[in-house]
Length: 393
Image 1 (cartoon, helix red, strand yellow):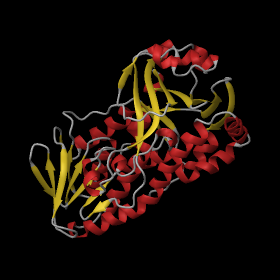
Image 2 (spheres, rainbow, N blue to C red; image 1 turned 120 degrees about the vertical axis):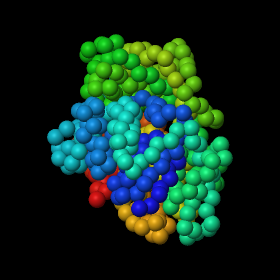
Image 3 (tube, rainbow, N blue to C red; image 1 turned 30 degrees about the vertical axis):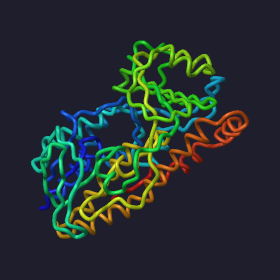
């Protein structure tokens, strides 16, 4: 049995704890906040996420909370015209072996948290911010996590799952602050009862306009509608959950067509974030320390894969650590080598989707619409097969 420390108690950290404990190791999760809770509204889960959650033992619980949508729908946001759609039922599920669904972040987080709390090999500690680590060089038999209060915890490995502003990454990679994308996203969640019945679509619908897009889909078992409107506004500084009034948000999207505007006007209690990511890096490990999730490969929202890739990471690192403490260094390097190329591709594809697919202007938008309209369902499945069809074991 090894003693594994995990910095960060978000989706990635808890998933990694379950994966490592499955192989008989003791796990200590160190969360900097004063409670274990997941912030944020809706996320999308591809078949690859369900495959990972099944391997982690929480698939049935998440499935019970999920909304299984019928299609991904792409609309011209200025004309209300449907451009293209990708069906997500019969043939899609047969091809990829699992559904595509939308959930609240808590619908994934809470089953992971319950699994960790009930596992005899997992200890959860809040108010424990890891600020740095120490080890005696590559191959050292132990690693020490140093907490903000000066406390020191020693283990056989330290997994940095502490998010896009990871203290572990700052020491391991040293690449400074996250990259500001220049895109501001406004988010709101409203009761479905406020939505006109004719607009209660069981789809993820994206309305694309010049340097902006607007997405909505049902969450909470269909009880709520998640609204997310993004503006390519050249924002230069990070913004995290800043409240904005309804008039400001509506004013940011003046070109919206009639149907999309009806939906946007329903939003209340808007909050805004400036989207950030980082460039892919080759170095994820330092001796007995490794990065995971947003600490390793933070990505923009446009491929809807942030949580999915963290769940994949967890399964792979758990399998890699099916070893003795003496083998940890080599196994962490194996995990890193297995995950780097796939996650780097996902990061870069997400960026490119934001530029070429969601926000083009003028003739480029016309060409985008023509390209999408010319794709069959099978064509679309082929394009996402590398992402949605991942087989972890």
